[in-house]
Length: 292
Length: 248
Image (cartoon, rainbow over the protein chains, first blue to last red):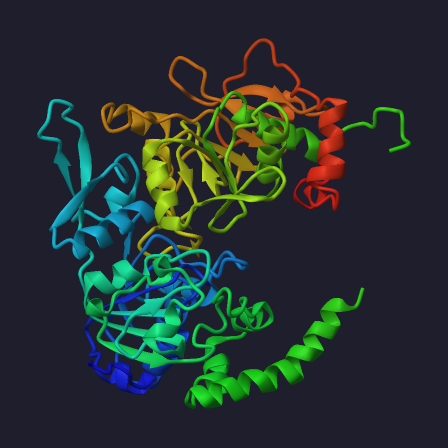
């Protein structure tokens, strides 16, 4: 049995500047934030990031690590517009391939199935075609003759995802209501690093949960990282909800100040800083908000 | 309730009715309301004249009128359902033009926008695959514009250039805090379908950045029945959150 466990720092040490990086989750939900924080501690930059974007994109954009972004949106869900992403985008800080949510999904399917493209009825007539002059269309070879977008495969060098549980071999399990696209990200990438709330024995995975919760098969996984609270401050149902108070703090704090206070140390230091914030400024702020 | 008089519906309640009407006779399809008042409208429709509608809890679970889970609809299945067409979505719009082209991506030059918004999200796939209506809580010239900066949702003029690909294109209605609008004109440009009580034609023209088609007869948006009002006020939105989106 291959033991694929490693630390977050060991996982990101295998990444390189210039890579195409897929990031799982959706918006501010089950994002591999501990891995993103580890990535921010390295000098890795010039990335092409493929993501249903949330604070992962916001942080990497704010830190200037993105050369090109492939996305349909970037949002914090309860805060519709990601402020750090907005700032970077309004500066014209990186190249953007803005595509529709379904085009994105078909691009993942194409990559996972080793196809150069898949036809999709989306994009035509919209300005997605104007801002992506490289997109091609394809005409049905059958009698209908309909024209579709030929959505190119979203092939990636590496994928980062976060799940609830995993075993040491790399079998990943989600216990929340939505798998998002994490299995597809892993299948569409050359290498995949999954972080999880807890590493458990293989037998324990299905002690209480049904086998269909085993979302990510180990043959698509390179490394497994145990990262408790590793999606913080995004949600990781059913283990924890989004830390809305801290997300508001992230969204309203200038990036250099936020990074200085929370992201200069390791994951342990991050957790301590968050705890200190909740006990200090966070508590003060909650009090103020609760006052009529 | 002890109140026996029929209370006067608020503007917000007219908006709920106008949104709910989008799903009349929709059958057994998914209602995808984005935003508060469309969500109330969809739930009202299911409680009354569209009992077979499917609705989610806002996450990945389909729930029935009593809140019982009745199905599983994670994003991957939701996106496949869109292309299957069994859905009527009501989206928001940061900008919309007379043809129904919609923008939620950014304001200004796309390459370096003056205001980055959400991104195109699912608007391109929605408009080519299932009926798409729009909800605009504050009708203004900033939203109803001559030309949108980035076409996300496809309008009638652009759909007409791709008749095969756009064969499922359908924009049933646009609801705002002032009235209901549709595209039932020879060239599919936007027309006033009804105005909410107290709203005048000059007021709507003043708040619209393009020439609306103004029919000779303009009906008033239909009033909620007393049973609908009861449902809105006691069952669907007892906390009166609707008032926060559209003030009286």
